[in-house]
Image 1 (cartoon, helix red, strand yellow):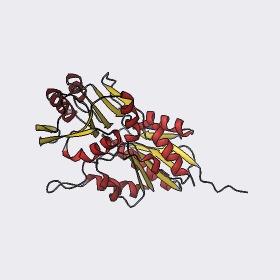
Image 2 (cartoon, rainbow, N blue to C red):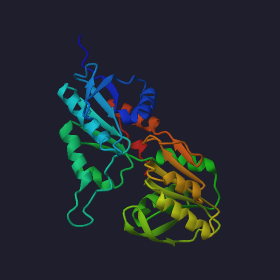
Image 3 (cartoon, one colour):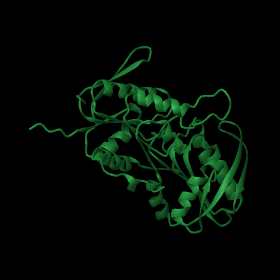
Image 4 (tube, rainbow, N blue to C red):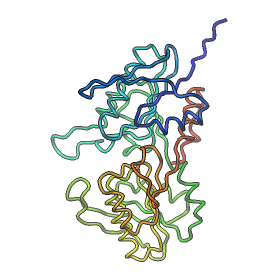
Length: 313
């Protein structure tokens, strides 16, 4: 008798090899073989070195800059589609271009919507991602989106710190919902930073809403790019009497001189996930793996089981 069970196969984009290997190990599977051919002008072409016909294919790749990372994922999706894979799941620990979720001024694109359409057109039948910059990005897709929360990773770590007089802080008004969700589970107070920007990544003014005097503060955000906001907020809170300031940020972009800013700041610790490969190791940066979370969700998706237990927030 011929078995009709759909096999699961896991493949990695080149930018996420280390994380993909960790996910596959937790899943209990081998990473599939993919070959990348490159032309002298930089153009590249992925090819699966094994059959994916009728399989459920998981393609693991974060789409952090450069744009080659996104293009690589799109080409692999297209290759899987044309190779007759039955289900094609794009596993995107970090969903790039998510900050462009709306028109905040005239004559600009909605980049997140464009990326969603590109992924679907390329062949993705399902998306698994974590801590989108804006929850409403899920609505840009016509395919199922499993939006995971890194709170399932961070909350046990925070509880193990056993901090007294704990206060959760949001580095801006937009992150207040996330901060309140953490404070609910930790039974803590909340403070919010109000900031004004001159332009992207440049803060002209910051003010604190709430009292941090005598508190151990944890800043909560979905990503850290230049680290300008976090370090400025940490220094401001120490000035206002905070005992210590830590930050938890799911996606560690850490571009430009971010590490230098962190080193020079009053920030005691920055806790991140490995959704994006770290450029360097730094004593103030603690990396927690998201591999077990993604492996569990992929298992449940393949087995058609509920994943609601993975949503703390």
